[in-house]
Picture 1 (tube, one colour):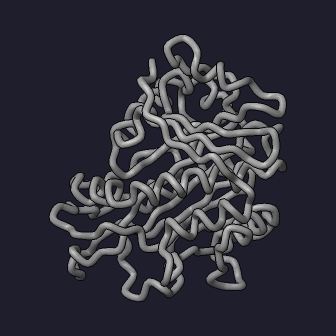
Picture 2 (spheres, rainbow, N blue to C red):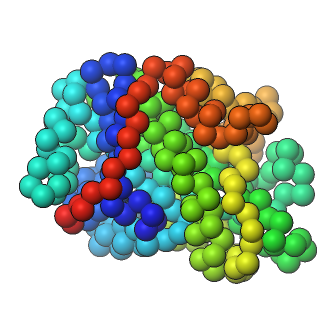
Length: 299
């Protein structure tokens, strides 16, 4: 997404480890491609294998699209490279300290009753943790598109084993959520005005399937809010289920869906709204020092 093309997000955890989220740049592609050679990671993220050239093309596509927001996750302290490795050489990023990525995908909801469990195929995993917050983007023309609800799907992958089991998943998710809610109006407006054509593009098979079909144009819509966040987690992935329960996600059903996944959703508090909700969660997780910086990153 162009919105975050020169943005870094910094957050400090209670432990010595701190995190930096950066745009997904060409310098990251080889390490990301290496991660995706692991069949276990591909299985957890429901991803198709890509060639290195395809991975570079994907990076370019994601950088310019209005329906995808991607950050690479860096961890410094606790045995990783220091922050000077991020800022040195005219802010030239490197592979050092990369531990994963986190994404937001935007969709239009076609469900008349948004509180019902839809037939959507979101996927989430633990510390290759994928948060999924999405709904079907297809439009059959039977509803007034000006009234469509925007739903976000989040995906988190901590690909480096040494980054897992340390509480970094919650911190990364909250860092991204704070960025999203602070820029919610811009993000949603860009998505709705981009004339999304419904063409599925990406390595995630379920997302491509949901985006296929008659996506249609979104021009002229007045929505400025993300209605809810949703995640689907493999029923045996106890660590992820606990992670998202700790972030206020609620199960929509006690039983898994056809794909063996438990769906969980998070709605904003009626009185407070998204930003205060995220700030409260950050206080509960003892996170501080959230900071957004605009940087002239060298690619």
